[in-house]
Picture 1 (spheres, protein in one colour):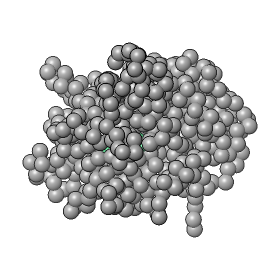
Picture 2: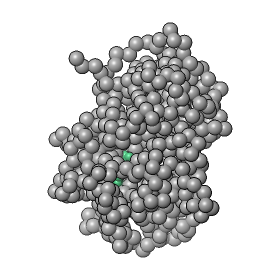
Picture 3: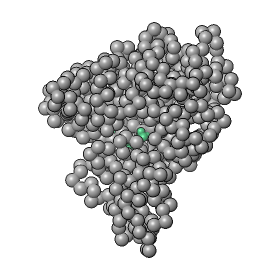
Picture 4: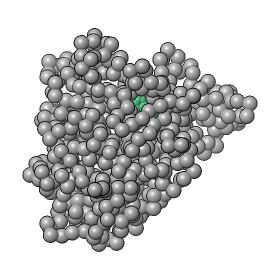
Length: 516
Ligand code: AMP
């Protein structure tokens, strides 16, 4: 027997087995907050979304875009949209109107759902249906459907696209990563297995739901009836309070989230206050290589378990996992942290290799179906049955992967990808810019931060502050340079290509790896 694997399975089980349990505790005090709702209510609301989409004439395969920070409504859309055969397009809510417009148009979304805080800024962004998630305009969309109301049938297909997640990469425009139901299903179940998600967990949504569908963890915890606490913002002390109030056991995030929590914990310790969650919380970290010192502090100062994973949106994302095996228990803390600072060993079902240039290749059922309407870009990364990650690294003798550098010209700041080409394109729009190179440089808070090296056009004058402000008016702020250096010329090859590695080198001196 072969039963199609679809993301609907996760909520079906959560609601069937844990119907009376709290599914979501929404962010309090925001427009459209749903408060605390049960798994039964989530199932009824997800079905309600599907029925509403039927009534709006939005059929199977059509795209539904959502621009929102973490919210219970977002959590419902994973099932109400994808679970009934439409395609969810989660969009980074930090993007500017023009950037969101591109994604909405490129994906051909017929529905655009917008968080009330983004409504004004995105007023020009249109779709056939545009609904603000303020608890009023979307009231019908998220109403509980009666038990005997059923959406129009969708023939479940595990190879259908469940979501298109736009990600910045090597091209000036983001690309739409098509994740199939099968990709999402296998990622969620293997991820849940490696992190031992059980029905006794309490999950805190510190990772943005838009980022690779919250890496797929929302699916895994839903299937186990795990109460999910929504965090809309990353504010260290508030996260600690929620860990305490709700008995949180599990969360995911980029190293910047860990840094915010460690800072808040230091303040608490100095004031003689307790740090909640000792010997209870597991924190799963990815997006950049965390420093060993951070790992050591998570274990010694918080008493939480540190788990690292590595992957990309294109791989749904789980490729490798680093979770302390029993063999490391008795090692000195520093040595243990060093071992754990590696990206990890291949997850079940994943094969990892490196090519002669040191690029990391992967093969797994988690690997995506291709970029939305960009077959030529897909064929650049999917070659002979292997996915080319654009990351560089090596496998140590114990099969743990170390990420040492990046082949692709991408900067990762605070866990979000920034395309250097996109920022360079933006700088070139300024009349005073003759040449520009955008590079990532190490940063204590964000891992890496964006630096622009600029040659000013003869006869023009411009300051660092003016150029940064120019970019901030056009691009999401996390993509903008935090510093600009003016140069007389930029290092180029004989063919005129920028030599980024040479430009980067002085800023990375003394660093073991070329990524941070
Ligand atoms: P994204 O598709 O936005 O999730 O970004 C994926 C990229 O993040 C990868 O190609 C890596 O460059 C980086 N990345 C993810 N996890 C890790 C990790 N554990 N260590 C180092 N880099 C990572």
